[in-house]
Length: 284
Ligand SMILES: Cc1cc2nc3c(=O)[nH]c(=O)nc-3n(C[C@H](O)[C@H](O)[C@H](O)COP(=O)(O)OP(=O)(O)OC[C@H]3O[C@@H](n4cnc5c(N)ncnc54)[C@H](O)[C@@H]3O)c2cc1C
Image (cartoon, rainbow, N blue to C red):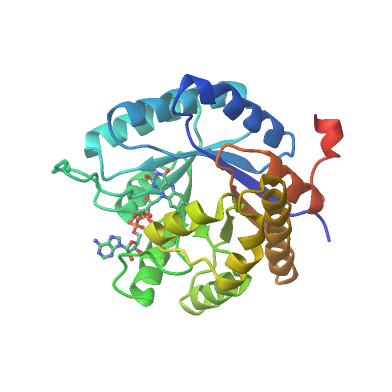
């Protein structure tokens, strides 16, 4: 079996102290020749300025295709259009088009793209960029129903997105059932599973609760002996992600999207087992 295609997601570093480790993680993972790397978007003020700055820097320095995330609820149409135009001018050719979450205690601009579908429609009309969108194997936490959620996904893909990247899942069965449901709903474009290598299990549980992703009982049992033991956690994280990928590869999945959390070690080890890149020593 040839190695799969991979993509790596990063977030803009929040402080000067985290910039060097971020750039190091990008550089190491770029050596694995991903299809693209992506950079998340922080809405509003300093966060969006940070995203803008790092999009430009990665375009200039990373040496690999870049997908820039954009969320639309925090800005007016004019602001989002302006940002997209300036990114296009700078060389961005791939957008991960998202609604984002409305900021608490802040009035949303009146004339805004209301959801990701409206943003995709606007981007597709301009025809300048490749578009990816988000998908939720366990449904978006605020979805009216799994069917309604899938319908929104189909609309985004029909409007011009070329692929959907999923919220992370740990159970391959969950992804495969989602793929089946999507097929029955008429979705024919690629659904790329999102993979989050497990770090601290307790933080993962509380974070997952907020974004509507389940943490299966078997995963909790597997990581329980690794509490406070980073070496064992890392070893189990590689094993878990690899089992996930191998199961999906046997089912014909050829693309995987890694949520790197700006760290390279675990993702590199997983990718190496998938047959990507040289040995870790060579890359060091
Ligand atoms: C791959 C990926 C990348 C992401 N990157 C970022 C990022 O860079 N920055 C960031 O801030 N966030 C990011 N997110 C999180 C995302 O912004 C949130 O999940 C957001 O709540 C929904 O965005 P969306 O584009 O999926 O929205 P949409 O596609 O517009 O909606 C998604 C689903 O939400 C449901 N829904 C949402 N709101 C309602 C409502 N009010 N009533 C009924 N149903 C509703 C619908 O079922 C719909 O299918 C990412 C998520 C994923 C999976």
